[in-house]
Length: 165
View 1: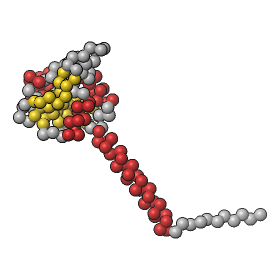
View 2 (view 1 turned 180 degrees about the horizontal axis):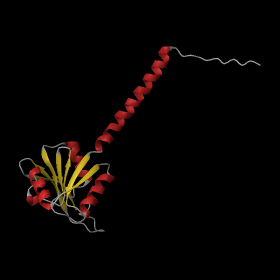
View 3 (view 1 turned 90 degrees about the vertical axis):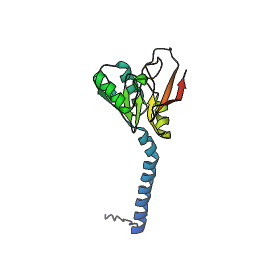
View 4 (view 1 turned 30 degrees about the horizontal axis):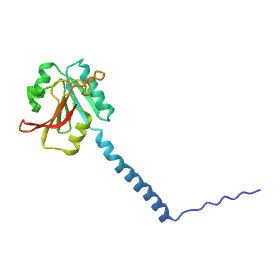
């Protein structure tokens, strides 16, 4: 018994159109994912070695999709980096981070960082002075202190960016 196999060939134009449709679908998918990829901003956090609240803050950012690298410095080097970045000693906290063109000083919540990156104000960055209980990385059960996230302007002045109670 002889079996005959018949192959149907599509005209060249149809195959090219199907291939183009696949490329267009992939481009649309890529464009849809682009904003999510952009949110995975790269963060360089400077701190002193062994600061557990700083590493807890870094975990807070990683959980939100940020890529965080930690750079351990001696206390004098860290203070110099803060001052060089434009953070006054009176507003200092335990860690300083660089996110894009901005400085983020202290235990700033992710929500405010995302807002900063979306609004792109003409500023040095955001600051949460000190180490308020209940801020990201400073959690202590149900205890919470009221604190403000300050927008640090290029002229050294601040304004309240957000308030947490």
